[in-house]
Structure formats: C-alpha cells, structure tokens
Length: 202
Image 1 (cartoon, one colour):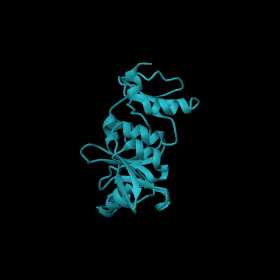
Image 2 (image 1 turned 90 degrees about the vertical axis):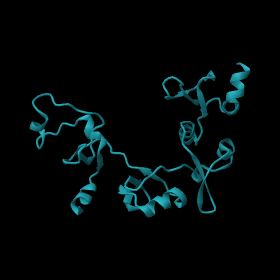
Image 3 (image 1 turned 180 degrees about the vertical axis):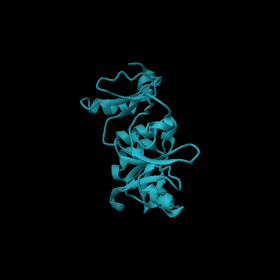
Image 4 (image 1 turned 120 degrees about the vertical axis):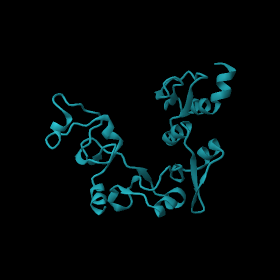
C-alpha cells in the first residue's frame, strides 16, 4: 500500500483493520456507483466508507448531501464530518432535507404513514425542528397512482410499474380506457392516489 493510499483513506483503513469481517463500501470513480467490498484495495481514485450502522448516511454525504445533527431542539449543519460521525448517535443525525412546498412526503409517526403534501408550515418544521423521519414519497410497484401529461391536460389513474411500456399495436389513443400504455413522458408526473382530492377541489 502506498503513502498516498494511506493518506487519503486512513480513517477507513483504520476502521477496516479493527473490523475486517464487516467490509467497506467503495464508490467507483468511473461509474459513480457504490459497491460492497470484503477485501478493499483502497484505490486512490475511488471513495471508501465504513460499513457501519451509519453507512447509508455516509454514502449520501459522500455523494454531496449535507449532514445535520440534532442539538437544543434544532437541526444544525455539520462542519466536521468525521468528528460528528464518531461522536453522535445515529438517531441524532440526518441528511439535510431538500423539501419544497407541494412535495409529497411520508412521515410514519403521523397520518398513518400515508403520503401528504408539504405546506409552508411543514417546510419550516421539517427543515429545522422535526426529529422524526420524513422522506419523499416514492411509488411502489403495483401501487395505484395518478398520472398526467406534460401539458397537464389529461389525468388518469393507473398502477405504477417501475419501467416504461410502449404499445405493441395501434395508436396510443386506442388504448386509453382499456389498458393504459405508459410513455416515458408520463413518468415525470406521478402522485399518490390521494391527489385526486386535490383535483376535485380545483
């Protein structure tokens, strides 16, 4: 191992020496993807993090997210990453939210875990004070969702599938109302089924 490797990855190398059975995570500098490694070589071009209970947070921070810690009833941005990771408990750390008004989010401790839209009041609360977990809503395979087109002229309800489908015959309009065929464009506009109430209120 070279001096450059040790200098760049010394924190992870030290952790791996103390926990050789746990492996580490490596971010390939060419593909930008994370891979689990049991026997890392600590390439200078790649990024490595410990495979501990904070690994998911570590990966997000390494990808550019801002880490926050909970102190005196408020979330604060972290300036010394390595010190904070070693001294703070997992429940007192989080990635800084990037919510905006109108986002669909899920908070399991309220609303029975159902998705709801972020309001102005929510935005202040989630970005600064709320310690419970709030995440952006993501549709699951087979979940009934509301879809709409780029011009916001057509709304329809259908099951979410994690891939784009193309019609095998005829024109797209021939399929509507029978078996909806989704286009790539449709995926840009999807919301939980509860969004239908929002449409009714307009």
